[in-house]
Length: 206
Image (cartoon, rainbow, N blue to C red; front, side, top):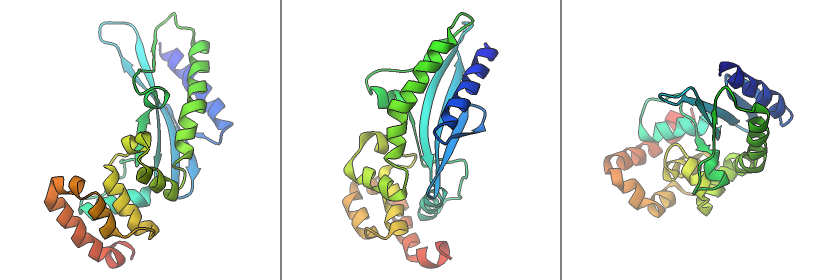
């Protein structure tokens, strides 16, 4: 079984290289974008009681400066492992259906590899391209794009609040007012954010 997973890893590493992706670590491939990276990866899980492994695909992107600012606004210690957004591409293919493969010793990996690559190109790439700048990420969140909003690690309102400061295209108070019901689910955290905004120019930008 291990050999088949290695085969898939090698296949995706070679094929995704044609699109500018490099293997970052095992089962993970990334490509630089302005201010961050976009990422494709696959996850393996063993099926209990069976000699098989389930594989599914994730697409996501990471903007470290945005992540740091969200933590700053929440006055929480920054966790570098946090990613800006990640989504199972099953949702991008069909939100009502699952997508993945159960691999066993008899699996034809060539067919699996071909299918996975086609879904990455047809579904994951367009999703990533919609958010390959901070401005486009903000636009997708504001437009209510369901996949982008669903993918955001922190809720959309926190990303939008941070983006309003980073991009200086929207007033932070306007974001709070628009999404007040969401922020108000944790009023102490909202109050913290309002105090942190006052410190943004000195404590964060400096």
